Amino acid sequence: MNKADANTISTASELRRELDAQRAEIERLQAQLADKEAAWAAEKRSLFEQIRLLLDNRFGPSTEKYSIKQQDMFFDEAESLTDDPAEEDDAGDDSVDDDEQPARSGGKRRRGGRAPLPPELPRVDIVHDLPEDAQQCACGCGALTRIGEEVTEQLDIIPAQIQVLRHVRIKYACRTCEDGVQIADLPSQPLPKSNASPGLLAYIATAKYQDALPLYRQEQVFKRLGLELPRNTLARWMVEMGALLAPLAERLRAHLQGAELILMDETTVQVNTEPGRTASSTSYMWVQRGGPPGAEVVLFDYDPSRSGQVPRRLLNDYGGILLTDGYEGYAQVVRDNAITHAGCWAHARRKFKEAQKVQPKGKTGKADRALASIGKLYRVEREAQGLPVEERERLRVTQSQPLIEDLRQWLDQSLEQVPPKSAIGKAVHYLNSQWPRLTRFLDDGRIPLDNNPAENAIRPFVVGRKNWLFSHTQRGAHASATIYSVIETAKINRLEPYAYLLEVLKSLPAATTDEAIDGLLPWHQDESLYTLKPAE
Figure 1 (cartoon, rainbow, N blue to C red):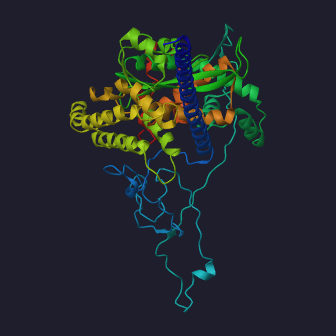
Figure 2 (tube, one colour):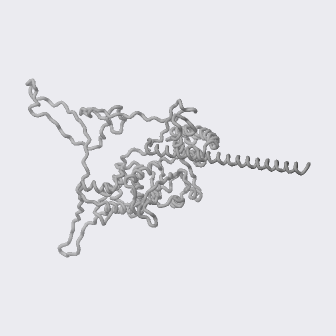
Figure 3 (tube, rainbow, N blue to C red):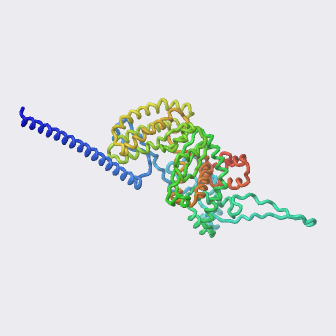
């Protein structure tokens, strides 16, 4: 081979290598472009899903009930729930003969009829009689004979009436020796340096913390009734009332620490004047719920932080069962106290519900499959409601365990099939990350399926926050937490909030021992205060 031929072969080899290198670079760029296009497509899908969820949250129904047509299902059955049709009030009157026995207020309501008025309400009779000339028989037979009466009942209300309580203390002295004056002691008052009675304080607190009526609106209500009560005065009273109720709240906390199971949640709150923080900073109201039926506790606590140190402080040395959402801030106290940590199926279900909302209309998908399986778990729990712990555990082993195993198999397959940033991807990965906590209910019949009781307990605070928007100071936020604790604990134990607050405000100022304060706990009250329906 001559030198020219060798150079030609060398040049051809170099060209071939350059061509291969260029092809490899083109393939790399194409793969990179494909990855970017896939990422852009996933980002676009995620943005569209967020927009649809925002629109649904803004304009869609708030219910989380799962409903889908049977013919659209590709699995066993639909887990949809329907409500009974609403009963319409009868347009007729409530006239009854005097010898008729009206149904009791607690009895079953007649379909299509108006519920009878509660028999315990006071009655005021307004008698309507015929004129004297109409009490004579038209045929000239003489006077008519009274044979009975017909009663028509109407609801009436007496608007709030303001009165002044005058504590008159009689003075005594001896005219002979003139050695001092004797006078009866003034009963202990909730706020000694104010002119607010226990009834007024209970009324204001119930209006704000139970009925979500802000203090500035109450100021307007009092003004219409002819009384000037500035909102600053009302706010100061509520802060002082929170301090007064603090010992009772601490007794509730001590009782809660002995509970086998505590449910815990938190929500945001804004406090305008916090040291070192702007007025728009986010703070938190934490809630705990636990205790046996008839002696349950709902405890609120304010803290500017959501760090893991807060549940560590609130739970102290508690070592029982803790049920929460997926927030990892509980991990530290769970490790330190060796707590049994259970997860909330309602939160897992909620993420699949969001994924279902962004599915193409008329289509079914993985979200429907997951929702149906979770619905079956809840159906088993409805069957287990009211059963002893041991029987509930056996029912879960025979019915819930197979459902969990089937859902786990579906989850393993789905993890590789869904984009992680999509709504369904987030739901699937959340379910996978929370799986050990979510399945803990199979091992202990005391563990409920979700954290809904804690969410229900915190809901009155969320409703109130929409009206009063923020707390002005940390003292006000702590006072609100204390008053909410007392009111919500009363409600969950079927006490009427105003009546219970009134009793507490009358007795607490004179309660100087733990035993006396324990006597004011909701489950130690007279039966006359138990007027609410059992909590669900």
